[in-house]
Length: 159
Length: 265
Image 1 (spheres, rainbow over the protein chains, first blue to last red):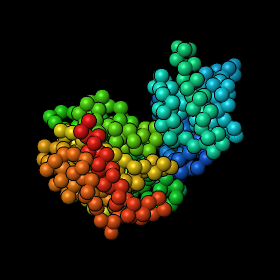
Image 2: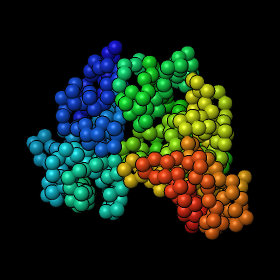
Image 3: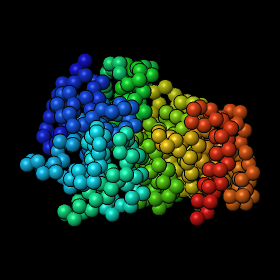
Image 4: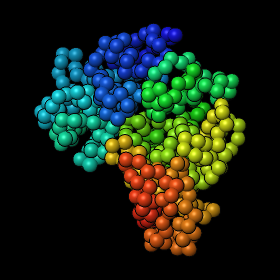
């Protein structure tokens, strides 16, 4: 049976008729066609599906779309400026070669921005701990950590 | 995932009415276990009753020597609570070790203990602090709550509303985690409470359990060396690709020693 679900995605109110079992990530990718949010492991381990909900990061493959009813959801598509200027965290990932294939990157960036906002001046060790829920199978994490350290600094400086 | 009917009750009473009549209904906390279990079709409830919007179920109250955590309080809220950090720092620290940042934003204490996953962290704190589980029907002592692997004393349709933790004199939790899943291979919670010493272990057995020999030894002298020679039997412990029962038994002693050291700091 289908039900109506409504929320704000990237600042815009959206409504969709979905099956009750629809996952939030399915709503985002298949109903709203925002395909920047990825499905990697589909078992809550890899974090490629990370989005922001009401100011916190969550794994959109591990929750029902219905659980996000009325929520303020932000995906990777909302991160860069309208003119295409990269967010300081995205710019840092580019600068420090914080990606190879790029599959995990949207989740990494969403988590990194949230972490940097809430933990300015975090140590490298804290950054590594914050990445526990995001897997990368290419880089060995070293450049991702470097990018987040730099992006975090740039975000603090941009305030 | 099989199809189901989704419900969003506004109160515990409404939620109880929805699950009470239906043995194939499931309560949804944060969904960090249930949604995945449903995706794997290990669970196929006909009805999912989402507790997420019931306001009375979330929140932390610290008063009169207890910390009461509402069933729908997210792990991140407990980990980040200044009040919990002050009253029971070990509890805040434990909540901050569950899963990862994203999981902690959704996962709830009620969901965790109702599931009684053998490798979950919260059961160690619930048992280690001698907490009381408050449901919509009654209060259950921690010692009577965890009854088996994924089994608790909860009756069908019974809903956890809060967990009340007595503030201990000192306590600490040490966890040897699976580096991939972050679940506890073995976690040990040690507490010196108003009612004596309590040592609770998660990850090692079918469900969280206490170690009376360690509690007795620590009662005589609260020091790491008191538990260093106490070994638990490997007979009833879990054995899997991550760790053998013998290794888990060994880790119980090691983690207990570390927890005592941490509690003394």
